[in-house]
Length: 259
Image 1 (cartoon, rainbow, N blue to C red):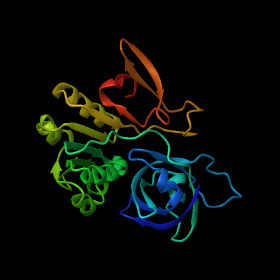
Image 2 (tube, rainbow, N blue to C red):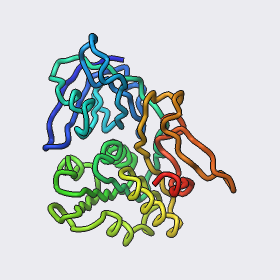
Image 3 (spheres, rainbow, N blue to C red):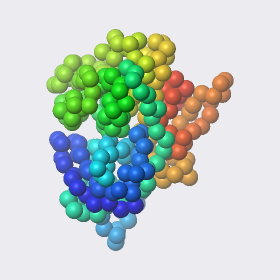
């Protein structure tokens, strides 16, 4: 697929907000899915060769949005796209979050894990849910789009490791205090955070869905580069994050094999 870059806004020294117009993509996308995007705009070079996986952060009016962090050559090239330029990407890939109606839910996001959580929060609000978002980062630079998030949540609780924004400490601490009040928990971010959130939910007997951010080469399940381990009864089985995921039941993931 191809689309036109509407916006490629630098949010701070680390994060960018990319908006792309593509009616074809928007009509196929579901909350929780991701895409594989071509980071370069030139056809005469194949460096970097592989596309980059990014979670879909929003869909609106024939456009979709991505939030990404510049960490290497691919994302650096992605940050150089300008308004009006054409960009290539895959169709929406992977599975989706379970969407409830008229329930009380918690979303727990860490750093770049806010990307799929952003669209999820908006969608759950339109379905009558009470949405609490716990959003953590290492510093103030790791918590972005706060005003937009306030508009699409009932309560926004921000934490940073150094106290430069919101509450000082880990995001799992204020979440743990309220976990028993929720009908469902959704989370995306660093694996240690996902494991902690899942364990808190298991102990409180609250269902939890996690969106895993694994390294992916193809995004189609062929390369087997994004294998994770899931409990199936008494056995541990392999699942492809790009096909059977990226959304999984957090209570069934074999975290000791991932971290």
